[in-house]
Image (cartoon, rainbow, N blue to C red; front, side, top):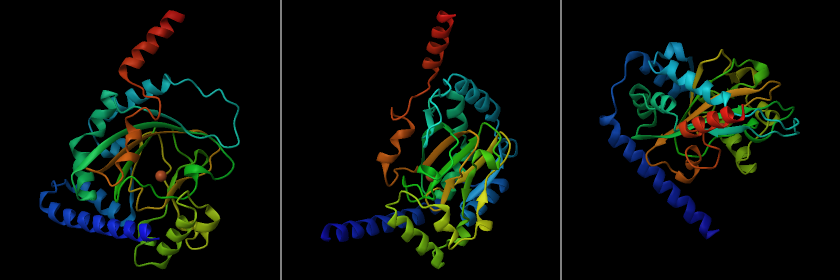
Length: 286
Ligand SMILES: [Fe+2]
C-alpha cells in the first residue's frame, strides 16, 4: 500500500516536471507551415488526423512506398491455418534507408515536436500484417498505448483499408476530455481490465457507436494519432490489413523500455543486408 502511494506521488512529480519542461520549451518550438498548423490543430482537438501521402506532399513518399513494398514482397506468406486468435505478424523495417528518410523528414519532426511540446525522438517502424478474426482480442480491444505521456504514431496503409479490413478506429478526444465523466468511466474500466483493453459492448454504454471514427481509405492513407490520449483499437476484420507503424515520443520517453521493440530483436528485422542475402539465397535456390 505504502509502495503504491509512493509510486503515485513520484508519478505526479514526474508529470509536473514534464509540464514545466513543456512550458519552458514553448519558445523553442519550430515554426510550422500553414498546412501543418491545421494538422496540429486537429490533432490537439481530436487526437487523430487522417490524410494521404499525396496530400501530405513529402518528396520522399514515393521512394518510401516503393521500398516498403519491396520489403513486403520478401516476407514469407503465413502458412499456418487460420487460428482462433491470430496475432499480427510484425517485421521491423527501421533500418531501410528510404523508410528512415521519410520518417525523419524535418516537416514531420517539426509537426510532432509542436504536438508533443518537447524535443522528440523517432523510435522506428514496424511493417505489420493483421489477420482476420471473428472476435476482439489483443489490440482489437479498446486501449491506450503506454510508451509516453504523449505519443505520435503514424500509420501508412500499404493496402486499401475498408470496413472489412479492420480499420484503425478511435473516439475523438473532444468526447473524452478531462472535463467529461465518460473519460473517468472509460479509464476506470480500462484500469479494471489491467489495461489489457475493453470491448465494444463496454464502450457502447457511454459513447454511441455512431461517434466512433474509422480510418478507412485507399493505399497511402496516412493516420497521425496520439495513441496514449486517444482511446483506439483495430476493428475485427475479414481481410488482412497491411500497415507501416511509425513511433515518436518525447526524448526521453516516460517508458523507454517499451520503445526498444521498434529497433531491437523483439521482431524479425528486415535490413538491406538481409534483403540482399535473401535475394542471393533465392537466386541460389533457382
Ligand atoms: Fe494501440
